[in-house]
Length: 372
Ligand code: NAD
Ligand code: MN
Image (tube, rainbow, N blue to C red; front, side):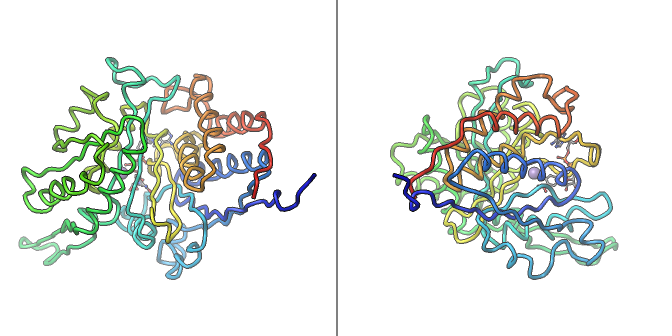
């Protein structure tokens, strides 16, 4: 018999923050894909609230977001973010005024960046098959080189001085390493590479190595090794199959993950999750690319990085079936060169790729009611 108790529809409240540049093109595309998923699924829905923060907001109000902006999104289930960066505003103002304000305000200390070579993508490593590159980079996302500590004095004078202090705390290092070991443990190969620069940076990076050894004892089934960050770049290119889960500092992993994205074919494909693993605050999902000034406003941006970020959002919300459905749809469209955008050597537009993903999702059999 039809049981009303079993038909409770869950509503996820999603904040959308397109930000600047192509963020304004790919975030609406991501929202359309979420709507297409909800339309085929009776178990859950999305309620979107859009926030027009970014460069235009700055020109009008003198700040990238309102002073109490975090309170407006604090109770959301997740945040879908585009990009921050405006050709007429200094990058450190846009970045610190919006994206880092959210990451730090909500203590999203684990930045997770999966990289794979998707079907149909022409990746630059000719000696490497698609199966040889399947990584997840875990980036410390709350402190280190991007702690914001430092200052400038005597600006413009010959004695000018400037510092960016890299701060590493035992608590911060321990929690990101524990997160990385746990993630490595959840993946089939159970393999973790801890990346530092503990030969030249002889204080904080040595502490990383020590804490890695301590935390590793909690994960006896995880195989792990250490690599210096410069050597790691060469290993990513020459021996990609020896890597699986990777953990590194804020700066190192920032750079390594752009390299990873390029090795997998394009910056336009790569996704990110900024997670609060303790779920005290909403987590934020975004493509790793920036505002792409050279193509913004033309409808040419590759939305796949945003779609893959939406997959990560669905996984975080516990909707693993829908996440799988969307990932399958993404892989079907990357396999078709007619649906490649300019960054992949094709001529498809953002709208064409989005339409194609939505059409695949619409053709999926409707999901059954889930028990509440
Ligand atoms: P970018 O990622 O914006 O662009 C680099 C190159 O990749 C450009 O040629 C661009 O056209 C191309 N590209 C990027 N994403 C693409 C996509 N989805 N489809 C097709 N092509 C794509 O990096 P940048 O040029 O160094 O930075 C531009 C601005 O973005 C700067 O203001 C920077 O601070 C900002 N930025 C923001 C974030 C963020 O908000 N997370 C990240 C990186 C850069
Ligand atoms: Mn970056």
